[in-house]
Amino acid sequence: MDPPAFRLARLPVLDDPAFRRVHAALPEARLVGGCVRDAVAGRPIADLDLATPRVPEDVIATLRAAGIPVVPTGLAHGTVTAVVDGRPVEITTLRRDVATDGRHATVAFTTDWREDAARRDFTINAMSMDAEGNVWDWFGGRDDLAQGVVRFVGDPATRIAEDYLRALRFFRFHARYGRGAPDTAALAAIRAAVPGLAILSAERVWSELKRILAAPEPREAVRLMAETGVLAAVLPEAVARERLDALVAGGAPADPLLRLAALCPDADVERLAERLKLSGAETATLAALADPAPAGDERAWRAALASRGPEALTAATWLAEAEGRPGDWAARRAWIAATPRPVFPLRGADVLAEGVPPGPRVGAILAALQRRWAEAGCRDEAETVRRWLRETVAATGA
Ligand code: ATP
Ligand code: MG
Image (cartoon, rainbow, N blue to C red):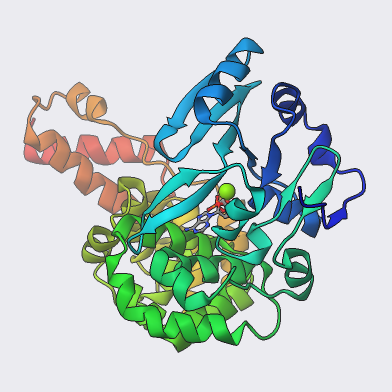
């Protein structure tokens, strides 16, 4: 068996009770993928992913015998999920690719750790680590991580043709780990692979775009996406990179939808949401982001705060600032944070209590009163608005 490439000093992840518990049952299992990358980089670890040469049936039986609940989450490709103290730990049997079609691979199980590493996308994602902190690093992942280079394992063009999603994953990892000049072979292969990206489902494209846009610093990755033609292929609505740049430079939160809205200011939200298959909640957020910050005085802002809420209104100020609209947007955000959201004080029941019979007129009266309340700066308290209600009913009859 290959000796490890290096050993890391005591790592918190190795003391993780979930890892220890699974490892006690499966002593040959190693951590793989993102958690090893982040351990080597000294970054916090998100998910625990393990690999083992045992076949899934053996993994399931062994974990169950050890009293660990296990769910066969992806048996066809060798993955089961152990649940320890409510936390999921994925355990995947070592694999090699038998056939690929540009997105999905037909895999065969193997007992060869290096073979499993060789099918992974980037050198920084292809390391494995045992419970003592020994790291196997066949492709120079540690050096690439230290230098901030995202490099394909093997020939970039071949690896992309096996799975075009890797062209987008490159930008996800470049945004998070890349520094300085990107790997030229990778960029050339990605540029040549742009027509092939059409094979990717909208769900996968959005899932990657979202992660790229959620990175603390997405600007260089998005610039490279534009330069290679990837951006135009997967997000032709992205016509305003300078707004994304301004948004990030201005210190706006790393919110993928806010950044998407900045990049695509002219997009038809319904069509964009439909094309990228956004969730209902994402679509609603994006639609709210299309509503610009109010142009008027204090009353307009109070009305906007009442109707849109502090979060959406704050987002609108970031977009206005990124767009270059004049204004003291930081002061406006401070005002939003310090101002309680005005709440219209009447409900349908109040109108009924004045003797108006149930029916469409109730809603119409409420809407008119709410408009008047908003135009007055949402300041008037329940007593005043009730007086308006009584006047309205008296003037028009119950
Ligand atoms: P993140 O912190 O973003 O989740 P990750 O490395 O865990 O990063 P995942 O997408 O969860 O990324 O994938 C887990 C691992 O599986 C990767 O580190 C990589 O080794 C491998 N992998 C995932 N997708 C691919 C792919 N399309 N081609 C090759 N290897 C892949
Ligand atoms: Mg992951």
